[in-house]
Amino acid sequence: MLDDVDRRLLRHYQHDATLGPADLADLAGLTVATCARRLDKLQAAGVIRANRAVINWRALGYEVEVSLRITLDKTQPRAFDDFLDAARKVPDVVEIQTFLGRVDLRLSVIARDMAHYQHIYRSAILTLPHIADIEALMHVARIKSDEVLPL
Amino acid sequence: MIELDTNDRLILRELAQDATQSASALGRKLNLSQPATWRRIKRLRDIGVIAGQRLDLDKEKLGFGVTVFLGVKLATKGRVSLEDFERAVSAIPEVQTVEHILGLYDYRLRVVAHDISDFERVLRRRIMTLPGVGDVEANVLLSEERRPGPIG
Image 1 (cartoon, chains in turn purple, yellow):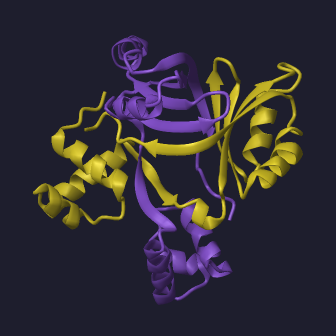
Image 2 (tube, chains in turn cyan, purple):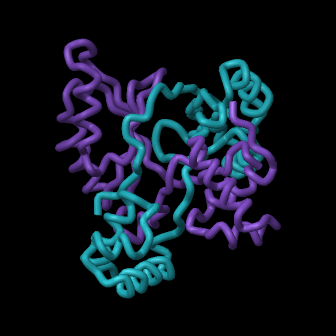
């Protein structure tokens, strides 16, 4: 479905998502019309799902980021559904992932400081349903975060 | 600390969904004038609240069927500097993110691969050969959702 030109286009677009069709056309060696048509096609096919602004939570005063690795009580048949429904209602949870492996889920939680984190942890996280075990990892630094696919 | 009002929050929420919207289209949605919307977006960018834009691609449609999170513990701290490890791991194209963490592991890596056997190749040839790498724990990603966060 995708050809080399599409891949080249996506490679450039991934590295700088602020580029418009004219800049992209230049980089990928296409005419602006061809470039725009290909981008439309990739969007219509659902290959490009969105072009999103990245929010810097630190600039908004959220200094703390914690990964909570959670194991659920799987004797409860609705453990995953109940947990996910409840976790989605916690505004400080910015990411929810489910896994096959040693842990069932990971929540990424942000907070203004450790006191704020402690509050969220006690009032909103520990009250989530069907938790069997929970393990916290503190973020120190992001070394690489571009999330670029090796096309 | 930066304070945002309701309109700023709405603009952020909108742009986190679709950053390609024009100031006038966004203004119409939120009942703001085009110049007022543009000024607010510019301010959010200037003060660094909007850190950039990211393309949200369908990995499966591009042939990357497997995403694995690896927890990596360094075996020989001190002998191999963290910088050496970080430089080497960041250079691997299949490694999408590298986070330095505190707790059970030293680093968390997000790795994409075409399928499980491709992942095995990346793990054996690229990850296990990194300088100083020790215990590695793998969790295969089944589902993922990004939430809007506390700007609602």
